[in-house]
Length: 159
Image (cartoon, rainbow, N blue to C red):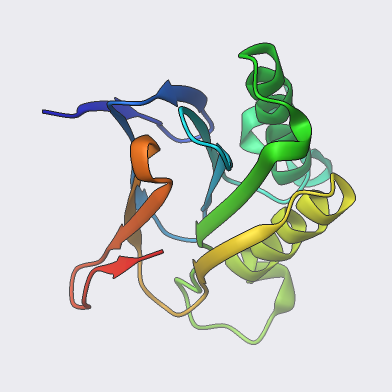
């Protein structure tokens, strides 16, 4: 029986073999899963906003794509994962409301900020399930470096 490690909104956590990182109800938020390509350790962050410039509460780095990813990288390195072995799988960033105003396209902005930060940190994105107009719940199985994306009215996607 695998042990679930729940990653709440604006949280970042690390898990080891035998554990599953879970984040529920990603709408415009993005779940970023960093993992050691040789197995045994993974981390997940539940991003709310692209950067802190647009936020009132700025203290928690895990809220933001740029700071949250960098904080999780630091945690992974402290846990013994060589930075060079990190890779990422991402999900979320949905367009939850119909609008023509790009300022309200938070999901798309989150995905772009996540990809930009990962590129700056030289961490490859090996798989993604982003965009569209529906929420997702994600499960990252540390043992297999497998990301399972579940939605209400769509098939389960395994990345």
